[in-house]
Length: 441
Image (cartoon, rainbow, N blue to C red; front, side, top):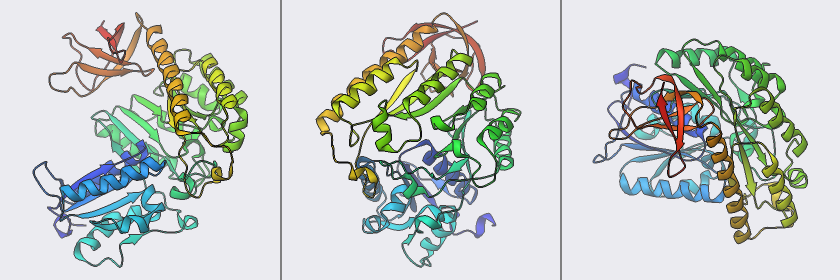
């Protein structure tokens, strides 16, 4: 399309994104596509011609945040067309259509057409406000490789999920598991390298299930990406424990660019709760994965997702889960409180947990998480680790991440510059416990 031929040329846009890294990657890629058509971001003192909101629906609170974001943008840009996409758009199109200011609702199967639909809506040619498809018709994989920061990119390798866990709406919102080809992923990684990207975070809904559409495998994808020249670091955003094979772990341990960093959803340390959740593993398998990582990558950072207060989680189950998590050699927890979602099988489980008890359980696990994170940080004081430095913020010390995901700060003047990779000696923990001091060698 010729730049000046698009109705979008010279238009001003505002964006809002809620939820997971995958959503942020998709929004960033969309912004790049619109920028190529002459769309610019609305400045603080400008009113946008249209607003795009990429939504989340993982919890009831997420739904409320989406509605709040729509209302906030409408107040800020009262004459703008508001386009809503993402999981909440797929699940609640009729609710969203009734919100003042909304002119376009785009479900999962149609998000690849959003530029075309925006043009139609802005010219008044759209057939209707909502473009959504039934769950069984969501089949299209929309690629995305976006720049999160100057040196870090997010590569979407997979979308959708075939796992129907009882608490989760993601399969209903995003459809069946699907992916692009390994060749297309390598091509996008090569383009990121050509643009100066140094690190790629591999994202998706259930990335270990990569290959459903193409007859390939996630292990083969990892091996292919490792060969892309120019990309110095890869991180795997999250992978199901039953799909994290020994082959993948062992390859990452000896690879050129895959970091000693894993994020693995546990969700509960109680086998009975895992059964109620319809997860595809038990605590024994989960422990074996952690131990395998530690055996070949003893310095690795291992992050773990946990949900507290699900239906069926009695006090005894939680205590069992707490003891199991406490016994694991992991680095940090991401703790979520269970939220009831319409249409999920979890609503058929009789035992419920009060909001107060959910909060108390959550706080205990957050405290345990902080103990484990600080232990991980302190373990490496005095050691030498490679750090990728982030883009410098004016008046602020240089910040970066080690290969094994320790946040470091460089307060003194040195030859270290943003976007560079270099070895440092790790020093003392900061007063707030968030960083380690870094000393150039």
